[in-house]
Every structure is written in structure tokens, then in C-alpha cells.
Image (tube, rainbow, N blue to C red; front, side, top):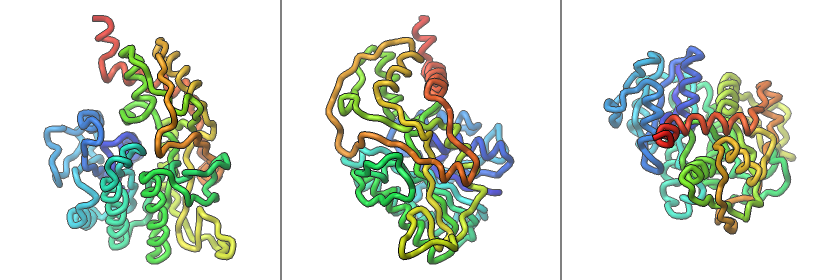
Length: 356
């Protein structure tokens, strides 16, 4: 297939673009390359994928030097005219939308960024898919949509009507918009609720990345809610495998869907939602111990209260994904953190600096 992946200078998008290209697909990657976090890391991902960072320019399509079927264009989803032109020129078969303004706490400071990228930008993607015969739109949702829910594990059949951050609300909005387009225009859409994705080339605003940086510098790490938190950490390779399999299965209308007792994760429209998580939550202090073991250093901990917009626990019921695709995320935390630390040391030259 010919596939558009938005957010390819980002963490998940970088890994996914490489994987689908290696699978034999032609991939066009898109990213705005905003400065929410270190732009040099985004450029580093593009370089690792074979792109010449000096040729990156707005609306300029470039091709990887190492992967001829992998292309890149810097573009904002909010730029509707340019986005529509791209769809007209490329004739995509499928779209995977990973581009979004990320982060829970940042949404407290800059809500407009989430409205522009996550809602307006996603609407532009839906409109482009509607008018250009896209066979399947797969898009990133988030475990944050479960908000104030306390029943665990979180299931896609649960109602998600009580978000606790604007980021979560924007992701819930994506799911609602996707269903509307599936219903009105027959656009097959699949939403994936990601659970705490981690691994090499990860986002530097994530806790595991911040902890690693602080521990290596001998600085205290901030442990929120006094450590009484848990997360369903999911390794990047498991996420990519899940997306690759879901892509091959555009949803069909569910003939058994009952509007009197409606299931939340499917519909009489070609619409599906899946959790994609490790199905094995780890408490925060155990996670820190695993990171300490990988680094060979002990963390100095600063215990703090819960932050606004955060949640105590995430725990994915991934049974629907497993049943649909046969893929069960199962990379152990020790294995995944070990791979991340190895990448971090090499990328930032930590070992060389220590030897010096």
C-alpha cells in the first residue's frame, strides 16, 4: 500500500515508518517539527531514517537515502489547503494519524495548541480522507481518555465521559469525530488507545526519560503522588506490531450492534476502538528500581503530591486487540528499559563522557 503516516519525526511515527517501509509499503511521512521538545531529537530520528536534515523545508517532499520507498514532508495538519494538495498528488491507500500536541501538563499552560493540532488538525485529516477514497484511517487515541474511571482493567466498552485534562478531552473528541465520519461517509476508522509507550528514541518529556537524565546527573527525580502510582508500560516494538496488524484489518459495520444497549468500541458504522497496552501495570517505585538496575545507579527521590491532570493508575484490557490481531504486547519492563538505556547512553555519549 501507499501509506501516509503523520508525526514521523515523533517517537512512534519514526519507528512505524521504518517498519512499514521494511514490510514493502511505500510510506510518506509528515511532521510539523514543532518545538514542544528538543527539535534536534526529531531531526536525529529523521537522520536515522536516512533523511538529509539540511533538505528539510516546509512543503518540500524529500526521499530517504537508505530507504527509497520512504519519503518525508514538513507540513502542519492545520494547513488544510496544503494537506489536501498532498492527498491529491499522492493518492494514498491508507492513513495513520499519529501527529498531535502531546503532554498532559503542557495542556494546562497552552490549551490552544491542543485545539489547533488535535482537533482542527484531525478534522482536516478526516476531510481529506473523506474526499480521497482512503481505505482505512488508523489514528492515535490515548489511555488518558479513561480519566476518572476506577474500574480496572480499562476496557474499550467502558464509558469515558470524565476526562481530567484537555489532552484527554482532545483525544476523546478524535474518537467522536472519527465515528461521525465513519457513520456519515462510510470511512473505515480505527482508534488505538496507547498506554505509556517507551523505548529508544522516546519522548524527553516522559517520566522514564526525565528520570534517566536526572539519575545520570546525580540530581533528584520527582516522584509524584508519593510514589503511589502505576502505569501499563508498553514497549515501542509491541506498539508498532499492533499498529501494523490493525492496519491490515479495516473495520466493517457490526451487524449485531444494538442501539438500545450500545457497545462503545464499535458501531453500525465501520468504526473500532482498541486498547494497545502491556496488560501488566507496574507500580512507580518498582519501575524506578528497574531503571536503577539498568543504569547501575541509585536515584535520589523527591516525593511530591499528585499533579493536576494526572491519574493514579492505567491498566489496559487488551483482549479485543489480541482477539482481532493475534498480537499480545509482552516485552518485559527489564528488557525494554535495558534497550532504552543502551540507546540513551549511545545517543548522548554518556559512556564516552564518563570514560573521559
